[in-house]
Image (cartoon, rainbow over all chains, first blue to last red; front, side):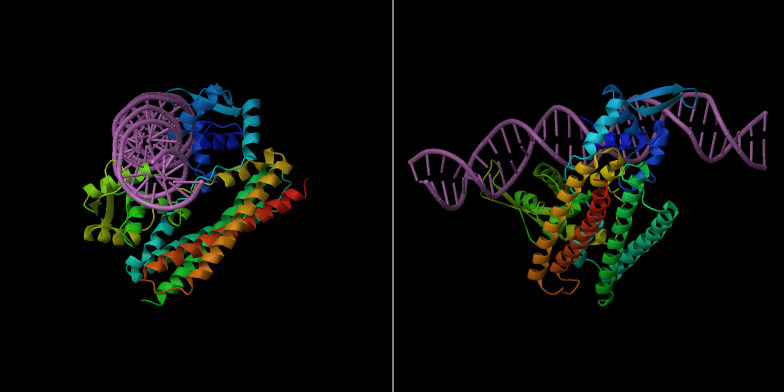
Length: 180
Length: 180
DNA sequence: CGCAACTATGTCAGTTCCGACATAGTTGGA
DNA sequence: TCCAACTATGTCGGAACTGACATAGTTGCG
């Protein structure tokens, strides 16, 4: 059974062949906005994908004790990825530490909470500005079978998410400011 | 070090003393909207909280091989929870399988994708209706130091999230419908 | 030319967590 | 009265994942 991380790796390789190291950096940005992993886990999963025949690599001379391995999808990998995309996601439960804190917020000092939510809001606003710059740079939305459609779709979602969270932070701040 | 689940457990116990079993059902609804755990994990974490002196229990006669244990927060536990609330959340990376699928959606059949996102949209709309009913039943937002403020705050966030996701699904459906 | 920063692969111990299994009292309906 | 559903605690194996450690070639700057 391929893990979700396996599919995350394959969805990057579907666009371009990459080394494990490059996959790890792609896991920071832009994929890191909705899926993350450390290189140690990426290497482990690449071994599984390799054993399952979903990816292969070309060895190249390069840094490290084992040279360089440029991974690419096999036709089987591409087919497995295509099938996975349209299967309903298995409700990975959302775990949101800030919402959990809000649930217990009635116990805490309103002034400290105010500082916390103002800090969070500043982060959301910075990300909104960043994403809007990306969006402007990306231009019009292409056809749905073009690789960059995935970038537009995820960026749209990320922007909507940040705006929703910013609005929630403002609601919290408004409530808390009345108390201090 | 208390895990985040430990604080989730304590945030439930801060309102009312409960058994491990009751904590597990609370983890389905309403806490399950933003934090989940199985009873096996809850029992394990209760042991740690017990050892740390953050919770205690009263043994009562009841079902099971070991009777019934009603857990409650100790003053130390309450203080630890209060301190934790205003600490910035350690960016638990968001892992969103549906967004990952959207990232790779250019590979898939638009008709199947359309079905997937229509199904997701229906789920969001159902939850919006459900949350709106809850919100109407809960009435006005109380003072921020009242336990039910936590319920209002998390419900507000959940409702905003569902609306944002529904809007994203509609955007995807609009794009995909033009292709089929 | 040396050295720091970067590229690159891989191992390992430990944590968190789930799913399956085990056990057994309580409650309510046919 | 029986039995199913529910309440209730707990163990265990294994998967997923992180952070630290180990190794070593490549690049570019002073």
